[in-house]
Image (cartoon, rainbow, N blue to C red; front, top):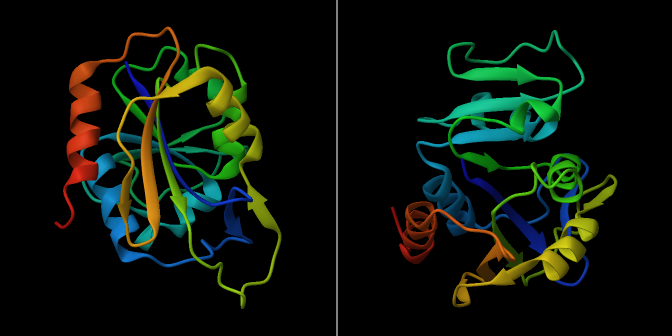
Length: 191
């Protein structure tokens, strides 16, 4: 099993959201995320899950990490409620961690069995939407772990004001077929 964290943060302050909103809209970033996670198992927090169009993404099993055991998912055949992050310690298959901030923090700063093997770090270099209201949500603790415990293994990929890099955990073996698929998804510019 390979665990992969995929995020897009704002340069300088590591913000990934304002309230329930992503504070920028870059079409190529959404397309890249879809290519990277296509056909994969996704774990998302409840707010992130609810931000997906119609609470779904085609061709993916989605695990919604929530405190609410009675939470109703939109597709009970492909979406599952998980109330304990430790269920992912021995997860069968690859797992793509797609946010939000509390989910990233649980995986990045928790048990070493939960830490992602690979991190796809996308950094938006533009302006944040000034019209959004709400709490600024950042992943600074995750970036601190990234800098300390991971090493960049990819080139810098820049498209539409977003710099994308791929990192792997220091001293860990990474499944090469997973890494190759991720790099190919990043390098492909359009669907």
